[in-house]
Image 1 (cartoon, rainbow, N blue to C red):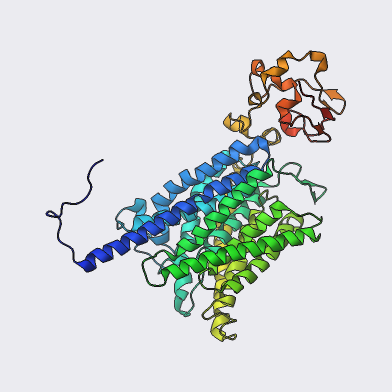
Image 2 (image 1 turned 90 degrees about the vertical axis):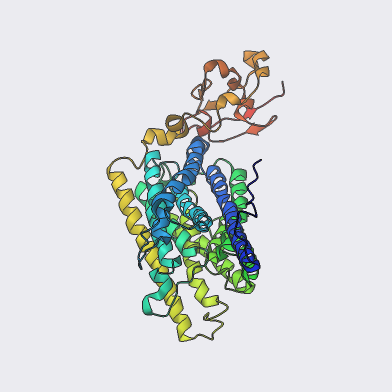
Length: 513
């Protein structure tokens, strides 16, 4: 291992103050990098959540899209995104310097990385809302535009010292969004709404104007993804302090993390109870509703996690849980928008409530703590204006972009591919290859003793569409369909097992060989 330490006789001697200053600077950069790495892990959380929420035939497709959030996002944000967001020189609207990171100081690399993972988060919100029917090439385009142009401009407005929302353009007001309820989540939710609206619903999602449930293929995977996101949000919000070396930094980071978990927990509980009492149409203790409610609470607290008391974080979470349920019903049943992940309800609904909540509950200068001062109400108005501005900016750019992609015929896959699944025709890599299931012992079982699968009184031969027939002999046995033995399966849709979309499996009795 090479010795990278500087020879003391060759380097100029530093004073104690200079050494201390360098140490503090290094600690701040290390803090940003480590928090950025934890936020980067949220990409895995989104990948698992989205993969579990789509059907098995589209799993590879959605996972690859999440990988490309990182790949395309990194290149776009390196080339132009960071320059638009924080480049110098700049004006009220946009930065225009340091393209390809040229000319930046060494200490800014950590800043670039932390904001890159924020940009990637905004981008990945969209992929879930448009899942299972969007052309892969269209995804490449909107990922580059979102991370390279749309997000950086909004970030400049709210977080750059010269941005118009932060400076207040002479009003004496400043946009309050500590960790991105507006910049990340309103933006991502608006883009998701635009994309899902323009691409249209999945085949079979609505019949005669009424929504039809299309379930994801694995709830455990979705739950794992949500837990990873919970962890990532702690760094997402705590790391937004940007430093750890100044007096009081540790307290702010701790408060942000504490408020994040309180808000998320209260929102998850409220959403679960709303589902259980039947306000959403049925009476169940729903895992998925609880997960989405908790995520909405964490989205909502982003804006003010550093500037509200824990009791206020609990209230913000409660309202966020209610907001999630309301937005979810509005998007699906009123607007008739098909959003497989409920991304619009979680991110747009939670984000907008978050930017409203900060001026109300802020520990200093909030409407409640100031006794309803005029300045506090002006701050509320400025935050609402900022949220609307971000939504309008994002909506104009993304709706135009998706509209052009649709007119060009490259936004949505063919109906046949959508019905059969994107994994095989688009990627040649099914997430669950059928030849990988089962075992060779079935070959010793007499043919007449093998149970048969029937769909609407029609016998179906083994499905060889996913592999070589020589590898598929074991598929004649129900065990190859990943049904535990012994078991009875009745009335299960066989869409993902080689049956047509209308077929149902008759009872199968698996017997131990």
